[in-house]
Image 1 (cartoon, rainbow, N blue to C red):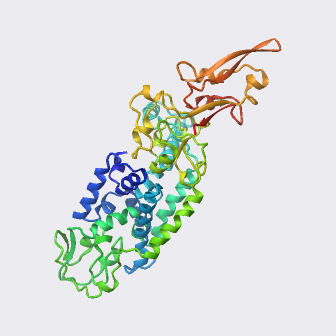
Image 2 (cartoon, rainbow, N blue to C red):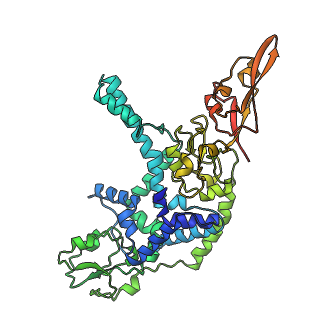
Image 3 (cartoon, rainbow, N blue to C red):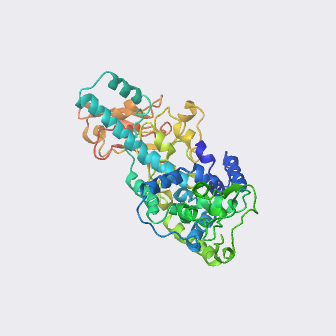
Amino acid sequence: DTFFKFDPLVMIITSISRRILIPGILFSILMILASLVIGRFFCGWICPLGATLDCASRMLRGVKTKKEAWQNTAARNMKYLILAALFLFSFFGAQLAWFFDPMVIMARFVSLCLIPSVTLILNSFFIMLIKGLGLSGPVHDIYRALRSSALGINVYYFSHSAIIFVFFLAVVALVFYKRRAWCRFLCPLGALYALASRYALLSRTVKKCVHCRPCKSDCRMGAIREDQSYLKEECILCMDCRYDCAAGTTRFRFSASAVDVPVKDAGRNAPKNTISRKNFLLSFLALPLVAAVSKRASSVIRPPAALREDKFVSACIRCGNCMKVCPTNGLQPALFQSGMDGIWTPHLVPEIGYCEYNCTLCGNTCPTGAIRKISSVKEKHRARLGTAEVDRSICLPWADNKECIVCEEHCPVYEKAIKLTKYTVGGKTISRPQVDMELCVGCGICQNKCPVRPLRAIRVRADI
């Protein structure tokens, strides 16, 4: 969760929507202060999504993209409109940074798509070597070592991971249109850094330019104008222009007055980072639409120690951290089970995996406090997710008078939240399960282990 502490968009938007200061927000404020000195360095030096887009652009060398033009003012201003809308929604308690934030987009892809895929491929590869080709010895030793570390957690499957992958792919595919198109036109985190970077002390200076122009054509952000001046807020300090400068006259220095290139047309054509009153009002008009589609269902089972549903949805940034570390793979991304504003939030699916009774990992990895940290295993044992209910119409002991005590056997609660009561039916004594509502924590292991199919005879219901 430390990486997200340095993300001012996530930290500030979530703090506003929750009406509290999230621990660690100081780090994100320091990043903004650093941008006031250096410039938009985060986008060029740190952002993992930006690095991915650069790699994709290198792979597409030779593929024709739309001709570069720095004068696309309206397109560049889209990211500022998105940023304004995110702040606007946050004041009404709706946290939508999870959809646009580049760090979250990348983390979600890594957690829910990349890691499961790599894990599954590696596991299948070693099984093929050991069982298919009969290799053992060192190969088997390596496999055993990986099973106790990298391959030790069952994260082979996440529901809706295909949708998450397609969304990530769509962001990356924008490089077919222009290099770093996402960063230029849509990224609200980039917009936040751009606002700070306009006043940065570090500036690009050019003296005695010979107008060879490779710097302009190679600029990743299209920030260099025809006259070799540049948009400071769009510069991500990749330094390509400095390395490409044949005359060696391009420098970056802490000075705002060393630009010796003509800038007579700059004032007329330079984009202004302003949002019109019309666009600002359109953001307000979008609020009723969001409210209309945000009606939440109460059927989802949230992770242990999660905030109350409305606060949880506002605080969760859908980064996938909790789902990635869940040892049973039970935490899955929701789609519409909790309404439109609950998309990709984690919920427990007992049919896939249960909440491990002694596990506290999800709260320890949550960067925004949507899942509270649990300090001890004893505290975890009291964390309630929901309550189990026995469906007597399909439960084997209740419906068919057949012996089955699977749910009671697997119940991890020391006093047993599932009690067996003996009934005599037709001269036969049957032990039938009943749930003690006071003891049940809704961990879901009973539902996971229930042998009745396709619908389980005991199911956990979320506490409303």
